[in-house]
Image 1 (cartoon, rainbow, N blue to C red):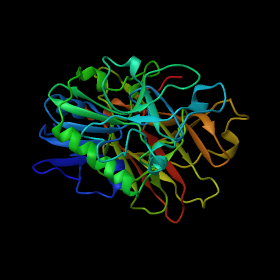
Image 2: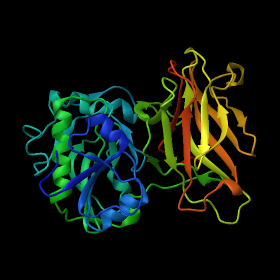
Image 3: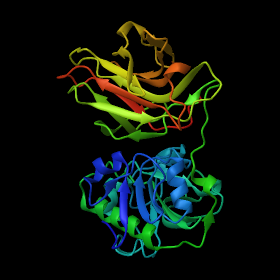
Image 4: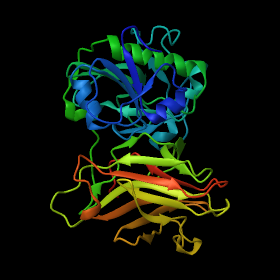
Length: 379
């Protein structure tokens, strides 16, 4: 997977998905080297900075950065209804150095089934300039649009490769590894003619009034990465701490806290669930290494009374810290929504972000807490 003379770093979710494949974890702290390739399923400012300075970046995007819609695999056109996501008329593969060894002819044949079922096609009209398209999703029978599943573009001195393919759905399959290898090689060696500004690759951050972004990136810790639900969508990346072992911990970094606030409320997307599993001592939440409260699943009676309704549940610590879950989607087992973590000034570090950790206090149960990397946290 690793091109000669280049180091390839990957985010935690990518390392789990591809089993390493010669990639190393993205360094947790400090600026990132620009003479490397990065493979990630969400972006942060350090990656954008490295990209502009000459790094290669492969982004496995499920629609969180670039606007798109889910598709299903078809070898030919079909019409399944009047909604856009019910129609798909196939994919066209352009003959480029990235795709030349991946697809026979100009179409994604049946070996692409797992990569294309549940993939995302991105709307190209909304982008600063039309990128170099590797795999085009042809216009649907409902409306004519310019969309792509795989594309690349220059950003500063670096090369960005964006894939909407369902890499999680194709986990452990040889075609998945082949596509990853081709994307890494392209990011390391190709220089697309079309160029975008740095701002085009950063996610748009939209937050409820009076809150601070509560998740920027993970920190080294012992957690799972899985594809599950969020309050906004299906089949999205979940970063999971599970009560199977007391060694399980999920740690992440927030955005910098406002300097003049007596108390800061961090907001992030996530969930908690698997109610039928055995109850244990629950979870502990730490702020900058200090335990501030313990919590577990909200009582069943606090769930919304019907679908389409919402409810709120709050856990309180002894030092003024509160963790609130606005339940915006739920099942009999799980609850999904917006978490708000309110922290008094004296517990904050004042650094470039606060370290938050959730630890399992129990074992032998598959109950879980998850953070969803998401930056638009408004309704």
